[in-house]
Image (cartoon, helix red, strand yellow):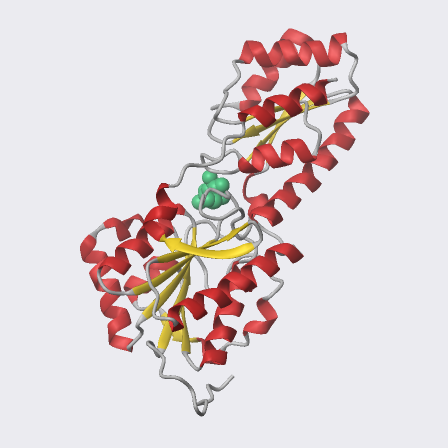
Length: 335
Ligand code: F6P
């Protein structure tokens, strides 16, 4: 993938661009990296890969992308340039060190694929003179400036497939199953997966049910309404010990109850076709924006259109509320 000099090309505002992935990995990050590298080469820019997120950036773990055959990563889960949680990046001295690494290599721009924390890092780098563009990459879907984040739909698919399996076995044994799903503090995965699997109860941080309320619903569903099985989808970080809650439900209702935490399984696996479509378009758009001399922008997909807005605005937009639909579908599914 040698970089070809293109004739008659308009002078570009930058020559070199680096890419990093940060925070929890998400399916589709690889598709986005591939798209960025290819679009950069198409525009006549030199793409670089930063390994291990902001940590790698600070340590100078940056290599030319021209040596990597990125095509093979379009359909692979995870991020082949690795990711890291690096709270040290909140320290200004650390950020200045990171900027120096870029300056040393003559890299003028950085594309950051990640969630909320990663966007903060990108915004801070933008304020000290690094041209930055943010791509929403997280299974949590908690970046309000985009209808979907890269990784959300693939994780949703994984959850739905797993809950369907859990439903098969719980139906066979007349059981109640509590399934905890990820999402950090956002209820998107819980809401979408709960609706998509017909869960009898969907619990997010917008309304934390008391254990007594949950027990009453299980009793009503399983003992009085004689339902074959019951699924409760719960967003993470709400209850300390779901096993203990399952035991208490069982004791009080006589309904065999188990709890399952889907955990990191939700982050793995190949990106769906739609994820690749979104990631590829966002990655290409990031390069186009940099070539138009733009910086400090977050890319989103809103009503099926690519959009870009200041990262600061993206970070402060209100999140959608789900309580009305989680309540509605819990009720409908309890019929
Ligand atoms: O942000 C992605 C995410 O998977 C969240 O849903 C979850 O809370 C967190 O990361 C878990 O992170 P880790 O794998 O570092 O424990």
